[in-house]
Image (cartoon, helix red, strand yellow):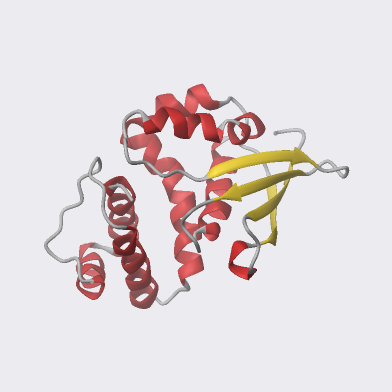
Length: 185
């Protein structure tokens, strides 16, 4: 993963828990002495070790860490110079989500080794939208729930999220059911 991800983990930890906790987490993850460069690629294992260390140090599940990170990521990437890409992706939650693959294609122009997830969608008869999430990185699906929460806040759209199909339970991809407030979505 790119250093942008690890730098965002650092920022959320430092913002919420302080520099001392971040130093404990880096030591526990075995990455002390590393300053993450946003544009440099790092082994995925390093990010997973950081998430593990955050979980142990803060005392929350890895799923909770990924979900909190997903929510934070929306704001972080906007501040880190990618807000203009957000504006080009959609002006409401539904359009933004449908254009996620296009967003990743544009981001991939700057990050040559980017291995983004892929999303596809279909409408359910009850009005919900089914989001299909495909990724080569197992176990990150709680981050998607957090991303949807962050994007829902950004677009002022009340959204209920269900996760009925999960790759961690043997499926080939994850599926999320999204019920967006039609007055705001």
